[in-house]
Image 1 (cartoon, rainbow, N blue to C red):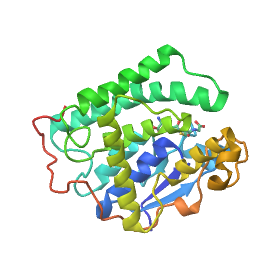
Image 2 (image 1 turned 90 degrees about the vertical axis):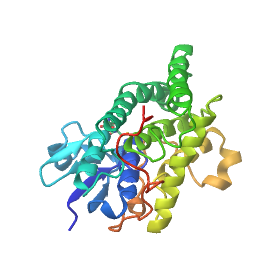
Image 3 (image 1 turned 180 degrees about the vertical axis):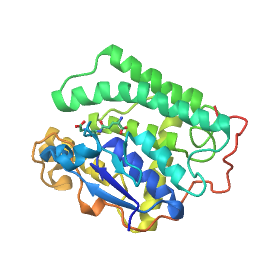
Image 4 (image 1 turned 90 degrees about the horizontal axis):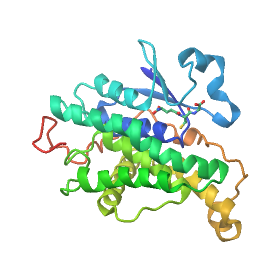
Length: 274
Ligand SMILES: N[C@@H](CCC(=O)N[C@@H](CS)C(=O)NCC(=O)O)C(=O)O
């Protein structure tokens, strides 16, 4: 019997963050029932969901103690449910640096990314120079400051929930077909997070968490260029709504043993986590 019930829209960035994080918890992961919602059909506004989350956002998780929403809070909660934290360090400073990145993601990176992507995808508006400057400031910070010393992940050799959250936020740029120049370290780090997704999916015999999002990106490309992409993508219905994915993207009751990229790496304060 799963201890936790997680409502998701499978292509949503914060939902993918929570789903990928749960997979990466591996054998430590609390049992989870994943319930896909179709936002296009308003399923997130059904009375049962509103009773759990009056703000009707996904991801929302229902726990033995009560409901919880906000992806970053859910990931911290999941870490607390594990016998030992996996992607949330124990060292007080190291943990605070992860919290700092999560706060920066929510307050700065996500705003910079969504300020460009959503007007473009949903209203066909081109980004302003100011919007692009904000995005460039954020991504250059990641590339040059956070990853500038050649570390594999944002705070060191191992992934943390800050990597998952920031990478999922940045994935939204793919909706706008926006590829950034001059951020090679950031691009390589994004690839590392993508590889965590692929490896944990393979361990489960499941699709990567990215798959429904990839399908959404592909459907937008098909709308823009139906002839070129028809064969590759199948049909697009012209609706620009967040797809929900289907049951095939729900997590099975097993957990990946893929775990952290560097399982031998420490969780205590390292000298250079900032
Ligand atoms: N900051 C929240 C964002 C949650 C959010 O806005 N989710 C969107 C999907 S990406 C949603 O639920 N939209 C439907 C609604 O707001 O009614 C998080 O990280 O969980």
